[in-house]
Image 1 (tube, rainbow, N blue to C red):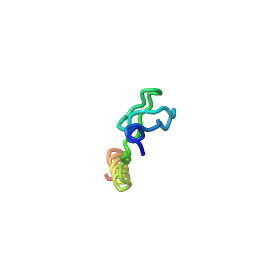
Image 2 (cartoon, rainbow, N blue to C red):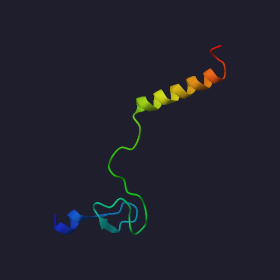
Image 3 (spheres, one colour):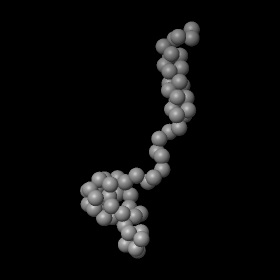
Image 4 (tube, helix red, strand yellow):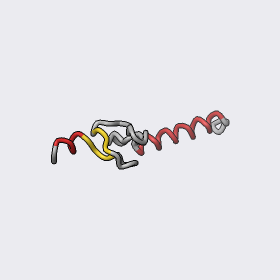
Length: 64
């Protein structure tokens, strides 16, 4: 692998060469993934939904 390939990569949206560290393509403007999973863990999502459901039921008077 030569030095140019290590410093650059192709944009997955427009296939133009961009710097490897880029977070946004300078050619098409698309945001590039950081490689990290940006989703909440499943248990946290379920917990939040359960809490919202509980609060809605409580405010509706279901526990009176």
